[in-house]
Image (cartoon, rainbow, N blue to C red; front, side, top):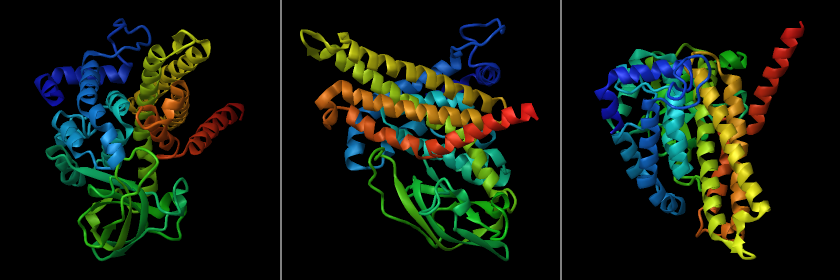
Amino acid sequence: MLRSIIQRSPATLGALRFNASRSFTAAVDTTGDGPAFGLNEMQMQLQETARRFTADKIIPVAAHHDQTGEYPWEVIKGLHSIGLLNPHIGEKYGGMGLGCLDASLITEELAYGCTGIQTAAEANNLAQAPLIIVDNESINNKYLTRMVEEPLMCAYCVTEPGAGSDVAGIKTNAVKEGDKWRINGNKMWITNGGVANWYYVLARTDPDAKTGKAFSAFVVDANTPGIEPGRKEINMGQRASDTRGISFSDVLVPEENMLGRPGDGFKVTMGAFDLTRPLVGAGAVGLARRCLDEATKYSLQRKTMGKPIAAHQGVAFLLAEMAMGVETSRLAVRRAAWEFDQGRRNTYYASVAKAMASDVANKAATDAVQVFGGYGFNTEYPVEKLMRDAKIFQIYEGTSQIQRLIISRHVIDTIAGQNS
């Protein structure tokens, strides 16, 4: 559906990209004299398409996938068929080439339905981000084009059992042998690990170099001999997502599958987060918004002391806090996404958005359970799942503590630079 809309009106898509590069939208304020906070026509179509798909295809099956851990292939195929999967892949590779702000609209809506399913889809964006940033035409023709042609998944293989936030501690190594690289090591907590068609892999190629030049990046077909996915991890939340360890034992990768030059891996890997962290924040906003909606509906139905609990100030203030968090974290997400779409470095804004939205989602989930009382602690009601799903936002793609480290360094360096 969405793909046909865009194909039918390339001028509209061009206008979308132009508008997104100037402001959030031109739908409310068309004078260009100041900020505008609405969405333009194409962005509203994106949002509405994702919202309807979520209501029709995700919410009805979310509990099933949470309880069984079954991978949501039927949902993934549906997302692919209407153009909501892999939104960043450029037109020259068959995709729509949507910006970060545009994609954040999709992500928030999918996350409203189920962040486990949304994370499964979002993991494609994370794995593809380094390829999009480097834009090696040969690699992208081979690996991105196939993602548009078929509902395939890919995975970002960076984290290891002993190296999460500390990327410098990565031990997976790659040794040059003729026109190939031999990779050995173990990765952990890899989203889409067991269903991926290919992996983005970060490996140490220079044991003597400093962190910034010690690593190289590779694109590796999942069916390459020597790759062994581990068991599916049973996590606290987001159970629809497929998370596994991946072992690499004498895996031979062609030289042309190196992304960038030897030693570029760390820079490429970190650069991908500027695109994906705002989207993680958008997912957290979607979850927080669902918490607010569920808690509000319940508070209007549940009565104590002769009136709906929404009429009690203690409950009403919890709802107000949730609403404040949703609105402000969404603005942070859209600022970070907009900065990326300008072609400017948005690392600071991306960290602000991810840290804030993640904390808001966790508080909203906790407060939603509180509004539900004892029922909130029961699996028959939706908020206990939301609470379990929320926690990982403070952990994956850089913990909330790492985001605060990035934010504080930026603030300190900025002020120090002004005073020097």
